[in-house]
Length: 232
Image 1 (tube, rainbow, N blue to C red):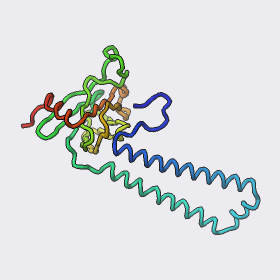
Image 2: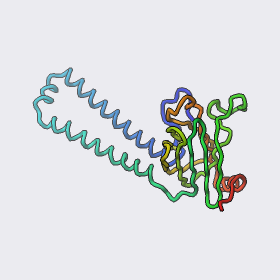
Image 3: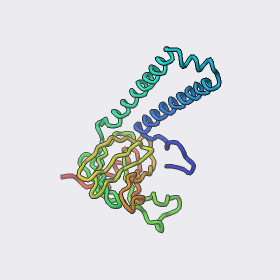
Image 4: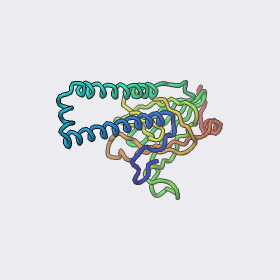
């Protein structure tokens, strides 16, 4: 989760978030390089008459400052297009998680083979928090999911537009009324991961936390058998 003073991404805990952070690092490094070259060229033009004459009179300089940006954009477009493709590619999911946004809570439906689990997820009241739990982020029922496997996340909404977002997992999917959105998801390590609705959905928008508890597939099967209902 985010910490005070943090200016970068959260730790990447899924293949999608690793790809997103890699693309960000590539573009940020390219941007810094462009900034250094442009400022260096500007300084040399302002301070040196000879440099100014070269920039004004030499045709190869004009060709250079047209051709180089084209090469840079072409170099950045390839990983960007590949990232967009990978974020939408479904990888034979083990289970399907359907999430419906309400004002202001989440409803989940987890189906895996012949079992199904349905529950609502509300923010935990501040007076019921125990030591070690986070204010405005804890919920009464955590979404338990298996790690190291591919999952299919389906989102929809009953009223207004919501957005199911868990930053460290690289998942951000809008929940739109009358529309079913789909996004693949995989969790690399067991743990508890926090998120929130990142759409301004109303007065209590900030009170729609998301808590995902990732466990090993063997523990997930036991949880599903204990709380799930058999699909006829």
